[in-house]
Each structure stands twice: as structure tokens, then as C-alpha cells.
Image 1 (spheres, rainbow, N blue to C red):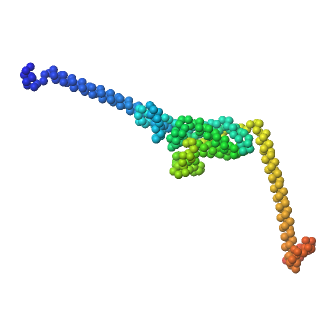
Image 2: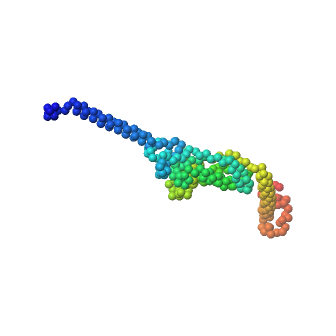
Image 3: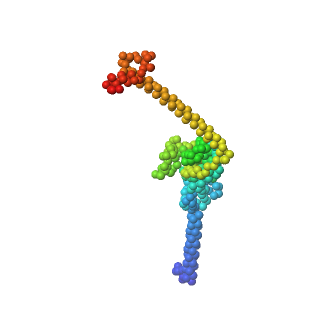
Length: 316
């Protein structure tokens, strides 16, 4: 034992102990690394949150509910962290159906309309929509569309709803589109198929396109006028109004016809008078002041014709 201690040699027992110690240390590091890897995997997996393809979203903190509206996310998965989730809005069409919508016509009669429209939220204005209406925007947009249609419907008479239905549908469409979408062009107007030149909207980059011209931050793409119903109690009033209108039109036509006949009679009398003056001058040049002669009005027509034939050597 003394020789081993003096010679600096290690015993077999100490070598085995050192080896076991190193092995345990390696195992501890491996377990720790494996645990960290698992935690990182779980952390990263839970950090990715997804949004469906038919949704828009804002990042929202779970604990406080505070919403970050600086960035709008569309469909996909994003590493926003385990303490956040998404507050989503529909990106596909909102279908608004208005049944039995009572409106007044220009002749102050009431009709019932069934109509439908489809609108989309604008991603470029989603922040403003959230700040103004949050998720309660649908009822606001429905009430606004209803009021716009009622207001536009008063420009047409009861009869118009059966004669120029297409024109009425277009007018109601424009009214709803302007009320919900405002006067500024949506961002998709820049696309080749945008077709916004026909709508007369204000370009987005223009100084005239301010918050007051953005409407309710939605684009109405389609509108359908489905059914028009006139109350039976209103029909007699409508017929009386139509009869009165027809009677006034007939009186106007008859009056205009009478005026036309009187005008033709006056023109014919004047033409005859001028012709008699011309013919008298040809046959009787010595009466150059014939129109002042009272006997001119009773000049014999045969005599005038004979004089013309004599002047132009025409046998009469």
C-alpha cells in the first residue's frame, strides 16, 4: 500500500469510481438535454397558431385580452407565442337577406320587397372596423343597408316596380354599396379584374379618400331584388293613381293635337296669302303696290293663271 501511495499509482478501485462518476455526469447531461429538447418542441409547437383560409385575425394576449391591431393575419400558421391567440373575423362573403322589407314608393304607396346582398370585410380597413364596432359589426351593417334600400326605393313609383325592375335593382345596389363601402375604392380595384372605373370611386391614394369616405368598411359585391309584393289594399289606390295619370296624359295629348291643327291652319293660310301676292306680282307688275289695293283680295284666280301663261308662253 505504501509503495502505491509513494509511486503515485491509482488503485483499480479509484479508477472504477472515477469512471462511474463520469458516466453519471454524462447521463445527467443527456437527460437534461433531452428534457430541454422536449420543452423546446412543446414550446415551439404551442407558439404556432393557425387561422383558417376563410378568416382574418389579430394577435390577442390571452391573459389580458389586449388585441394588437397593427398587423392583420390571413389564412396560415404563425409563431406568435404561447401567450397569444387570434381574434378572428370572417374573410368570406357575408350573406344578408332582407325579407318583407316595407318601403314607400314615390306615389306614397307601400310595397314589400325581398332582397339579398353579399358583402366582404376589407382587410385594409379591418383595424377601423374593429376599433369602431368590434365583433358587433353585423347588426350595424344590416341596419345601415336596410335604411339605404328604403331611402333609394322612394325614387320609383309603384308602377315602376313592374316595368323597370332591372333599373330599380341597380339603384338599390348602388345605394347599399355606397352606404356600406363608402366612396373610396377597395384595394382589389388595382387588380386587372377590379372593374372599379365603372363605379366612379375615389382612388385610395387620393387626399379626398379620408375616414369619412370609407363607409362602414365593407364592400358590397352582389345584390339581388327577389320579390316585390303590393298589398291588395294598396292596389285600388294604385289603379286610381294610374287612371288619373292616364287621364291627364290623354288631355295633354288632345290639347297638343288641337294646337298642332291650329298651327297647321295658320301656316296654310299664311302660305296661301304669300302665294297670291307672288302670283299677282308676276301677272300684274304695274300693281307693285298691289298689297295695299283693296281689290287685290278679290282678284280672279283664272285671270292670274292666264297672265302667268302669257308671261312664260305657257298655254293655259
